[in-house]
Amino acid sequence: VHSKEAGSSRRQQFRIPMATITIKILFFASAREAAGGITSTNLELDADGADTQVLRTKLASLYPKLAPLVQDEENLTLALNEEYVDMGEVKQLSSGDTVALIPPISGG
Image (cartoon, rainbow, N blue to C red; front, side, top):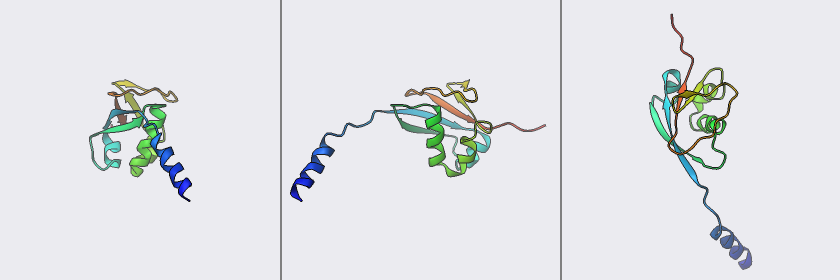
């Protein structure tokens, strides 16, 4: 038993922390309502593989009421640093990026 415990602590000792990035999220209209009324937040993602698809998944898990919107590209457009992300396109994210969640605009 003692050797297993030593092995455990040895493994933990050599863990390499994942590098993270911080991005700013802006919530508009129904996305703001679904996220509990917040207008913006900063969000950390693992730097390795951080992209708009990973962001959608992370937002869906953090804000369950937002999940139906954020997981459907037809119902929520992303704008990365003030440029729309085309439907089906996946963009890499970097620390300091700003991503706006823009639901469809309706009205007459």
